[in-house]
Image (cartoon, rainbow, N blue to C red):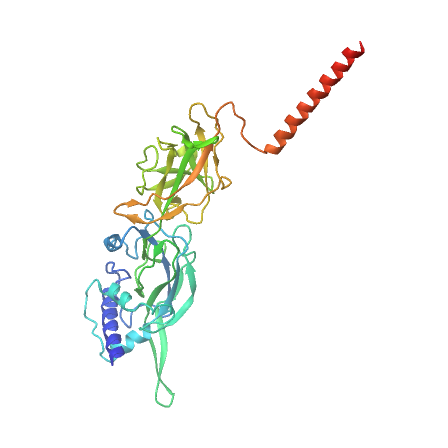
Amino acid sequence: MMKKTFLKKALTLLSAAVMAGAIGLGIGAGSRVSADDGDKTGTTDVVVTKLAVPDEAKAKEVKGRYSTNEVVTDQKTVNGAGFVVYDITQQYWDAVEHDVIQTDSKDPDMSTKVAEMANPAENAKDKFDVSGHQVGDEHITDDNGTTSKPFNLPNYSTWTKKDADGKVVQELSKPAIYLFHESTTPAGYKASANFVVSLPTETASDGMAHVYPKDVINGHYQLKFTKVDASNQKTVLQGAEFYIKNAAGKYAKVDGYSDGFDGTEKDVSWVDLTDGPTPFISDSNGQFGFTAAIKYNVGSTEYGLDPNGKYTIEETTAPKGYQKDAKILGDDQEVSPKEVTPAEGETEDTNGYTVTDTPQGILPHTGGKGIIAIVAFGVAMTIIGLVAYSKRRANA
């Protein structure tokens, strides 16, 4: 009885979403459909673009503009999110036929509520309270946050009704209802709720329908360095200047950066050297670096820090009295960012990486045994020469 009540409520909400023409995430109305509208043999390509937002409040703010007839290009997007689609058309229209639900509600938030109620059980991603069958394979978002290929979905779903003896008594073809589920969530993000798409619907100028589910960012990372004297690591060095580079050879450009390291999270993009990257300058504590959210993209530009990425430093100016030979101790120059937990707008000040410079006039200690051998050979040759010279004088 309880399950039946839940199904009735869920389908009632779904009816409202469909009849309002809502496309996932509580966005505005699109085209309305009826059982007799449209080409029953046609399909619609549905493209999912995963957006990154800083918190739940922002996830609720950015609705309304993301309709199916608009392509968004200036928002933070998520790479590596996977989606699967379930056809729940039969459950919906069966409920309509039996007057389990009413089709005259126009509450614009119903689509979001249906998606939330239809969430799969924990650790059972293929089981939904509003049951249906999966359509096609999982699709993964690319560097632009967009599924590399669209979901090609029939505008109408067809099924048969049978009597108690299993005999087909009716074949039905109705406007299709699909539930989208985030099946793979990248590290550092909170998965978006399920959302519902009803077809046929409006499409953008490219002929495809676009939907924009949102993942909340919950991964925050630091690249923090401390500059010290190579011969005495208790001596911190102020005034060294660096660029920070990612594995693709792009340079960090940090909004609002000042000298040193203050721990507050900042927006960082990765740019070419000609685009004015940030020069990082070690402060009186010898520190420099920045804190940022997990990696995301806006168009072709990468932002934030990749938890699995490798980063290097490039020293442009050494402190007075030191050579420009910076070395990250123990990490062969490539390092990964360290995860931190935000607290009241600031991030934890974790231990970072130590960077050394050698004082001018002191040879860098590289391959010490080789140097010792050369010195020993020189001393030996000097001694031999002195002995030979003493013998010649004695013989004279």
